[in-house]
Image (cartoon, rainbow, N blue to C red; front, top):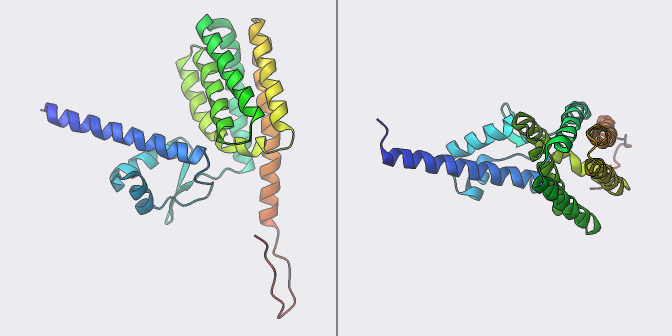
Length: 245
C-alpha cells in the first residue's frame, strides 16, 4: 500500500522532472544550446543539480518532442533538422494552423480575442526592437493564444509539439533579410480576417504564412547541406590551407 510519505516523494520527483524538462527545453529553444551540441550528462546534471536517472527521463521526453536526439554510442545531442525534416514539419503545421485559424474565428470568446490582440501587440513591439530571444518568445505566445481559442484540445496538443520543432527552425527563417517585416504583415492579415469573423480567410491566411516560412527554411537548409557536401579545396604540397572560422 502506498503511504502518504511515498506519495509525497513521488509528487516531488514528478515536479522536479517537469522543472528539468522545462528548463532544458527553454535552454535549447532560446539558443543556449545549439543544434548538434552534445548534452554531456555529467555537465548537465551539475548545471541543474539533478541525478542522472532524472536527467535521462527528462531527455527521453525531449527526444519524444523532437528537441533532443539520442545518438547510439554518442549520447544525447540537440536535434539537427534537415531540409527534408523542415518540409515535413511545415507541411503538417500548415494544415493544423489553417484549422486553428478557422476554429479560433468561429469559437473564441471575447476574452480570448483580447488575449490574441495583446499577444500580437507584444510581438509587434518585439519586432521593433533588437532581434533576440524576446521575438521568439512573443511569437510563441501568439500561437499559444491562437490555439487556446480554437477550443480543440487535441489540435492544441499537436500544435504545441509542432511549434517546439518550428521554434528551432524559426531562427533560420527570421534571419532572412526582410522576412521579419513580411512575417508581421502576414500575421496582421490573420488578425484582420479574425476581426472580420471570416473563418475561411483566417484559415487561408494562416496557411499562407506557414507556406512562406517553409519555403525559406527549406531553401536555407538545402544551401547549408550543399555547402557541407562540398569537398575541401586542394592545396599544393607544403602549403597549409587557411581555414577562416
